Length: 147
View 1: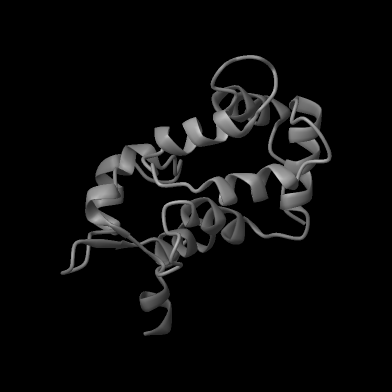
View 2 (view 1 turned 90 degrees about the vertical axis):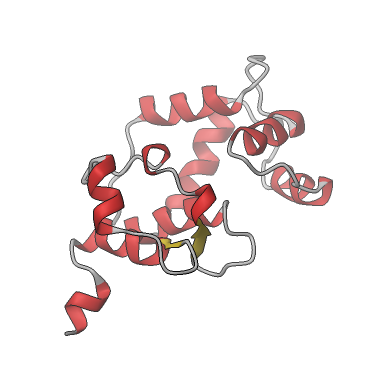
């Protein structure tokens, strides 16, 4: 069973997403959050689908319940992978190098220098985030483990 994140961390995430600070995450807040993450081409249909996941206006209580539902039955690796998938809508398992800023991915196990050293970009300039997630949660590089 995955460890539950502290409620304070979830409150902080809610506050970050509630861009207009009205106590409710609405479609505009979602669009602004995606824009802050560098994804400017989110369609209205995508946003509508996300909003439909809530049983009503997304205040902190609803957000907390939705967060708990998303984590139920997931392992830490799957949770981290799902976070990276925001930046990888095609599901390729990589991030373009120009989108990869190690300091923006809070992996407490690695300093920014270690991120660049342990997870260099490939010849095409991409980051294999699936391998990164595996190492964060298992402590071993998949390729090293298979040798």
